[in-house]
Amino acid sequence: MSNLTFAAGDYVVYPAHGVGKVLEIEKRVIGGQELELFVISFERDRMILRVPLAKAKASGLRRLSTRKTMDTALTTLTGRARIRRAMWSRRAQEYEQKINSGDPVAIAEVVRDLYRNANQPEQSYSERQIYEQALERLSCELAALEQIETDAAAAKLEKLLLAA
Image 1: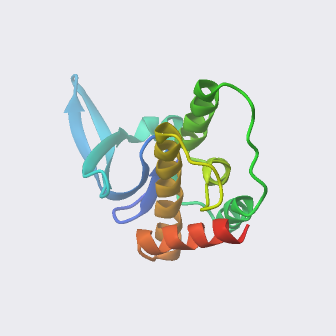
Image 2 (image 1 turned 90 degrees about the vertical axis):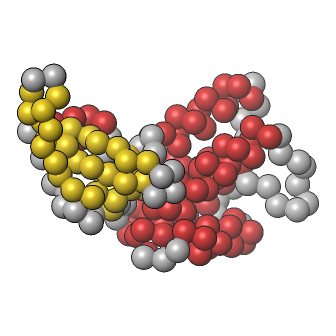
């Protein structure tokens, strides 16, 4: 049994999909075995995910970040971007790993490193896609934590990036 306890209405983070809301805990018989499942709704993706309670911890399912963790992520945004000179395919892979880790500080590093303002060179399509994916993940978690709209959270993040 999992030691993660969530109730209907709780916001959670599933690393591969971001912030979702627990709708219920249901029992289902699958392959002749009765399983208890967290039923999680991801509103933005219009998706319902069922995660077995016993596998929840191993899958990376977690509560929303603490205020302290989110503050660390926000501080990371104002830091200096670190652009490595590795091949783009390698960097893209590392960025994807950070995003899918579900760690808000790692996601903030991706947002910071791929952010471009008006006086910087153009981004490639794939850079822009990864940037937007990371920004969306971080803003969704910030929005759930602060109980604000996702767009307002994204604006807050971009304001921090502009100030950096």
